[in-house]
Image (cartoon, rainbow, N blue to C red; front, side, top):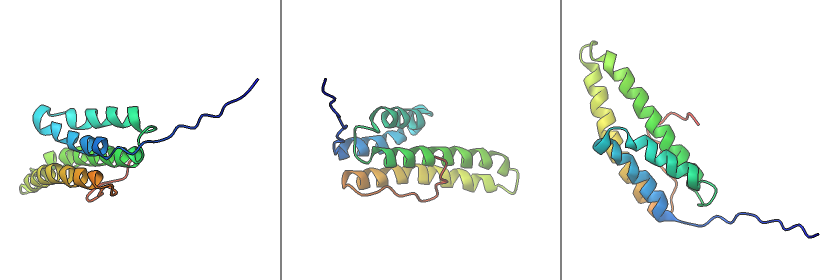
Length: 120
């Protein structure tokens, strides 16, 4: 009997990495797809695509950080309207950073973790 050791070979797919980052923008269309779609893509292809685990963790950490900032901004509205600044920050960073990271992923670079709390 012969035992064959089959190691999984990871492929380089920068387009899928860029698409995963760009799928975060679904939040602006559906309201919730920006967390679910990248999570599904990450979980299904983290072992097959080189760099997907790093980029997927970055995306999930970023989305959880944005949700936390939104949750903090809601009661902060009562404190002299500081929550409105929080909403503006989350809206701007939540739109710009996925685009920047999609371009970085397409070029094969590591994702930016600006304003991100590391949960996972």
